[in-house]
Amino acid sequence: MKATKLRRSVPVGAEVQPGGGVHFRVWAPRCRKIEVVLEAGPGAGSKRKPDSFQLEQEENGYFSGFVDAAADGTCYRFKLDGKELCADPASRSQPDGINGPSQVVDPALFRWTDHAWKGVSPHGQVLYEMHIGTYTPDGNWDGAIKQLPAIAETGITVLEIMPVAEFPGNFGWGYDGVFMFAPTRLYGTTDDFRRFVDRAHSLGLGVILDVVYNHFGPEGNCLGNYSPDYFTDRYETDWGMAINFDGEGSGPVREFFISNAAYWIQEFHLDGLRLDATQNIYDSSERHILAEIGQAVRAAAPKRSAYLVGENEPQHTRLVRSVSDGGYGLDALWNDDFHHSARVAMIGRSEAYFTDYRGRPQELLSAIKWGYLYQGQYYVWQQKRRGTSALDLKAQNFVTFIENHDQIANSSFGQRVHELTSPGRHRAMTALLLLAPPTPMLFQGQEFGASQPFRYFADFGGKLAKSVREGRTEFLKQFRNMQAPESVQALRDPADKASFEECRLDPDADRQRNAPLFNLHKDLLRMRREDPVFQIQDNSRVFGAVIGSDAFLLRFFGEAADDRLLIVNFDRDLELKPAPEPLLAPPEGFEWDPVWSSESPEYGGSGVLPFTGITEVRVPGQAALVLKPKPAENRDAD
Image 1: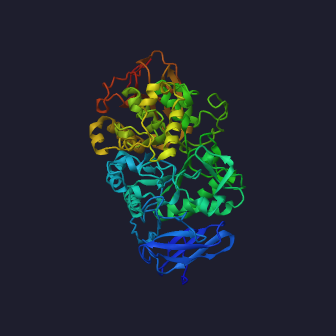
Image 2: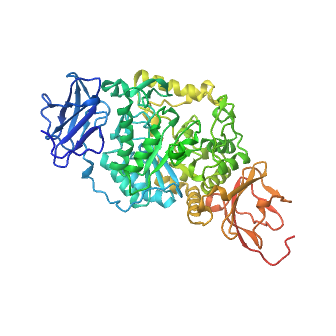
């Protein structure tokens, strides 16, 4: 039976039709015959004899057909050439995991309430990276929903969700996904995910999703059964076979990923994507796949603003340049340079991939003003040039952070950065992160000093688990402290469930337990949001100067002499007398008035020192100060 009015939002997969029934479509050029086998749910036969329907062969390797007995909830597989049963590559749900059948999902059944939501623009955002499986003791969408009001109250504006595409095992980071359209069953149903987004929007929070378009996971990937053209051996990735975006048969592969990007925006009302490891997305086509993905995402939400962030290790700025100028049209890039320099400044260790950073004031000033520190210079660690020019880019083109999932896990034992540095340095660096013009990002629990680690964990078994464990150990040996046998022995096994369970946060308890640090983050984000100068987020109106061996200042120029001064000192108490630095001079007719200090007892500090900037400048050690102009008293300042 044929559908009277065929409706498809995605070129492949199973889609419920307006008049009932389901239309199935799959790309399988290596097959001669494809059947859809209904195994459970509406329309299915018995377990001994499930109903089977042959799909019609189209041109270019596609097979399609309409099954009027199928409906939302029907579980099915495709039978390839009368033999092998495989899940749908474009499955919207895998209720029994990667080895089970696919399930028909009707997204139209969910009742959205976010009709007035306008999306996420590049300006004025504060990102928050979340791993749903460890964010709460529940480890699911429902548990995370309960935390959304507190997250919004903190001053965060956009949630960046780590990958959720169905992956092997019962726990993992999500970067080993094999079903790109199926949110993992581990965190709840597809409607639980939608409810999370809907609730976030009601609180003013945007939601973007981390997606992996550079490789598939090593376990449970059935795409090769449908076509070898999904992959190519002309390129190499760090994690497995590269995706074929530009070789023979790449047209349907490109369509698969482009439609996947749009799918998250259309069916889950997401506000954009974070694109993982884009340096391993290889495409020599005239129009790069990333540019097409960006265009598809924005077209999928014509009445909403979409936000696109890229991770790119070699620091290619063409990703955020306009398509008309030969770029890919993304909005922002993760700035690893800022993180690396900030971490060295806080912890003092310049080794492994931190070798090319000293954590000096000038590095941090340059990262704030110009984005990447390496824009084509020689990079000793890689023994080659690194980066491309970013001097003309805006602050909002860069996402800065002092924690993310990779960097915490790479601290060997998953320790948070506040555990590896002094409280004073941590508070001062947090002030720089949250007040400087680039878009700041926090990692889950950072704002309340989470006591739990964040390790690498992946529920693989057998030889694969052994290979992952050995690979992880070998990677960490680039750090000198991890070369000792006792250090290696102390590493947790990524496949051990305890490695995962111990990373689960208890947000409610930690917000109370670490209230001073939580208050620090809330106050800084309120200042960023409400202060008319900090909210401008314009690096062309911010200038810096080094005023000590580990101290510097940033002058934010506002309107009508309404400037702001941020002074950061990572070393001992600093006394500037004399103070031959013009950026320290207040606007004419004014004097500096201290309005915020990281050493406030409210934040766990030792107390605020008086600021006598008229005759001398004194800055406490391991602290940050914010000053604004106030009318000068009638007295001789000289």
